[in-house]
Image (cartoon, rainbow, N blue to C red; front, side, top):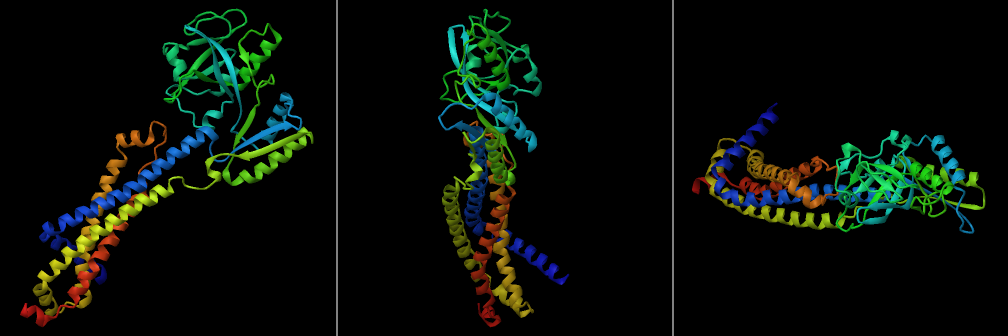
Length: 429
């Protein structure tokens, strides 16, 4: 209890001394506050940059851990799609994998008002949106019931959406696939074509100038099968089931089980397809490397912040030494009334510690305001981050710890000088 009382008394005494000498220490504390703000901001922005990098990687290569399965024959011919699909479904059921998708690049003829355009189409399964963090600016991603609809569902990019006049998605705008129909509204479709419903819009990057869209793989398969059995004028080309392009199979699994599942998937698919087929299972998501691409940047900027902290501490040391020399009489009188060397040492050091903690708290508060501001989110995220992380607690704790350490280092030398003050010297002073 006496130790706690002594500690609280020393802190209060240090605060009172700071109030008396606030003009002298203010400038040095400003430097400490700025340095702590810089250090904390670097750590917090590093978390946002890492989140941005992770989301960009996940949109292209999937979340950790995304496994890719491919199969091809030794002579380069395509594996029977029906058999591959059967093997794929059996494997997903065997290992109880809920997030899996086929991915195929295709193209569909879309008649815009300015003429027909072959639109790049990515045929996927419904879980693809969650697996690849697909962002939507309007509407919604495919829902499980969409796969049962007779009219195909589309998620188009902003360029596509702009070309059809940005209709209200609540009205279920349609688009003609194949034939000479007009997009939007309830326009008809020429013989041999089909009508698709737009359910969502993805934001287009600045470099995107051509329309593109997502479509459910099962609905594209049905469309191509109908084209193969009919006149073949639906404007469908290069689909996943007509040998025009290779289908990629993806599954999102727990990272801890990824190595075992890779081996098991390779073994099972190989056994089902036979020795004439080469099966490859691999990972491409960013987590397989385990490196932080922003580590060097964070270390450099963090080193600069630490240097500023040390400069602030140096200024605080100079102010504290001057203050101690002016308080020789006061310290001597305390010693004459029984104050121990330890008490004097602790009291003088706490003045620096309390001052830098106060400056550190101000710096951390400023860093929180800076990092959490919408302007910084827009500048750092570049519109690519959908899940901004909260301000990291470890950044705030690091800033306060750095401020405390600076205060302790800055107060060490003045405290040693104060301990060496003798009562007789104080009387003569």
